[in-house]
Amino acid sequence: MEIQERPTETLLTITPTAAAKIRELMTEEPDGDTMVLRVAIQGGGCSGFQYGLGFDTEPAEGDLELTLEGVSVVVDPFSVPYLRGATVDFLTGLQESGFKIDNPNAASSCGCGHSFQVEDGAESESAPDATAGGCGSGCSH
Image (cartoon, rainbow, N blue to C red; front, side, top):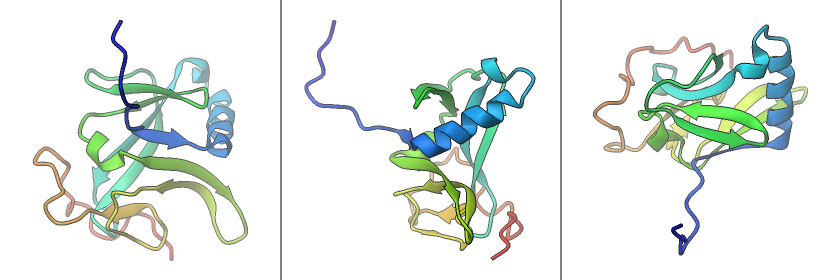
């Protein structure tokens, strides 16, 4: 057994509030007890990339598999560098309600927080086309 000399960087965290909401939503799905939460980035959105959160039946080949706050989470290999250090939260308030991703890799993001842009040169060659979606990510602000 190998002993690590320093802790590894956490790819992604989920707040307890977000985990509770995810588990609640999973119970509403017919196969919810066997589903995983897929967290991804996609080309498009007001600011270049947009976040994707959704349920999947199982991990795909190459996915990074995590268990966070009791939730099975998968992240595809193309999204990993863009999500490193990000936190998924669930907000309940008068002004803002819903899932929010706090991403330290985002150089800027749109007003609704559903899309973001990275520093020039920080994009991977295999990343989705960041210009594909334009504005129309569902931002209503």
